[in-house]
Amino acid sequence: MKANEVLDNLKRRFPNEPEYHQAVAEVLGTIEEAYNEHPEFEKSNLIERLCIPDRIFSFRVTWTDDKGQVQTNMGYRIQHNNTIGPYKGGIRFHASVNQSILKFLAFEQTFKNSLTTLPMGGGKGGADFSPRGKSNAEIMRFCQAFVLELWRHIGPDTDVPAGDIGVGGREVAYMYGMYKKLARENTGTFTGKGIEFGGSLIRPEATGYGNVYFLLEMLKTRNIDIKGKVVAVSGSGNVAQYTVEKLIELGAKPVTMSDSDGYIYDPEGIDREKLDYIMELKNLYRGRIREYAEKYGCKYVQGARPWGEKCDIAMPSATQNELTGDDAKALLANGCFAVSEGANMPSTPDAIDAFLEAKILYAPGKAANAGGVSVSGLEMTQNAMKLSWTREEVDEKLKGIMKSIHEQCVKYGSKDGYINYVKGANVAGFMKVAKGMMAQGIL
Ligand code: GLU
Image (cartoon, rainbow, N blue to C red; front, side, top):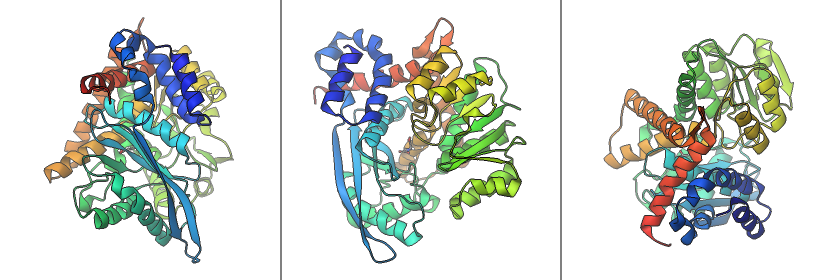
């Protein structure tokens, strides 16, 4: 297999899908060597079978807004690969959603889920619906209309959706309610459900906590203590909030958060009380991060991301391609020595190259943010067993999973004393799916 040829071919067959090409390019570039050690892979064209999703559903979602206007959006579900378990991955509601973005996310999810050690395949879905400024009733009607199409493609042993950008506990609950009406079963086909109806403790916290647990494992390899370290976090949604919560608990100093309008820089550090304010602002009033700066009298920068601020550690937790090559250079020039990704593919290829060249601790999202889907996997287990575990039990399991993902990265990514977590995560995630595909025949 020649990575460039495979990529060119995919670009020709699926033009105008830049995010999908980007995600595939990043993986192919690092697995080429491992792949070519197995001629049987090439013989069965494993690489194309792995890069091209099993199937894609796309559908119109029709709903009525509060003014009585009938609105349409496009909804999708990408079932990428189910070699090691049912398709599993979130649903994203955001104006930017299109097939390219969901294909990149479903592709990434397949490798990420493989790394978790749990039996989950990869999938992703969503709609180009923007929850911004919508009333609760509009959100409910949209979720119901979305599931009216989606429900026939999903099930507890076939495809289990969850949340992502724009989809949290409220949206999952509305979707699950509608799903149950249509499917007439109660087996937990969504994860991220409310705790009263089959959800798992620690699921809301899991992505952020998991990312900090992964960071701790990385720091351990260089004997660095997290206490007192200045951390730049981007985003202010679920992942960013629980990243900051865990950082505060461990004595680190998170100094930035952001939303799509701009970022705040609080040199004193975001403490527990300030984080409570952000959680209320974002989860309840659905306000803007700018209001934090007004309340606490700190710096707010409109239309920018926080990577120019001095920090020891960066944790991008907003969205794809939010950290460019120039941002990476700025971080490195300011002494940043670790980057751990809470979002999916937040660093551009240039940024990744800069981090690897500088040999800093750099964890790609598919390893560092796998805690979210891991606890989703644990939610599926609890649903199947019809019982629920305590916070402590789930948290311990999450820690164990993040540690094991780190070990896999070390095993497949170490060379000349440097751990290349990109290569480690890609090769480890790939090998498991590839072996499963080979065993199951040409499908
Ligand atoms: N959307 C999350 C992710 O990117 C979680 C998916 C899930 O829980 O299924 O991994």
